Image (spheres, one colour):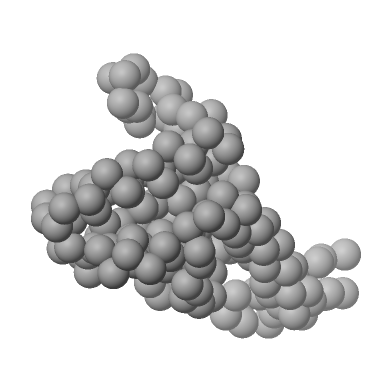
Length: 183
């Protein structure tokens, strides 16, 4: 059985937040890549992670906390990682966990009035003005949701085959990553 942060137990086939283990397995198989998960924003427990760069410098943690509050006020599920781990470690950690959008904020960014947003689905890095933080985050989350759906649909369509006999079914089933429609 799984336990949640409140130390309660969920049924063995269901996670503490209501998704069955089969659904989670399907999400991993559909959206995972060699670097970890890629969670669709609509179901990601954390949609955006804020990573302070050079957090020991004056004003960085405060700026990250302010950005977190602004994003949370828009109804987004956001986390600021203020741990002592290095930024590189944090990048890899949240990439592996499948957080759809990473926001990097350091002293030079603050001075320039910008932040860096990194999409988990494509790895694209974009410098965004801080006064457009909320609108750009929402836009990227929508684009990530649509892109992951389109990639999954393309994979499904390219790897679904029809079999008319048991022999054809066996032959198709032995292909890597294929789906079989059996009559």
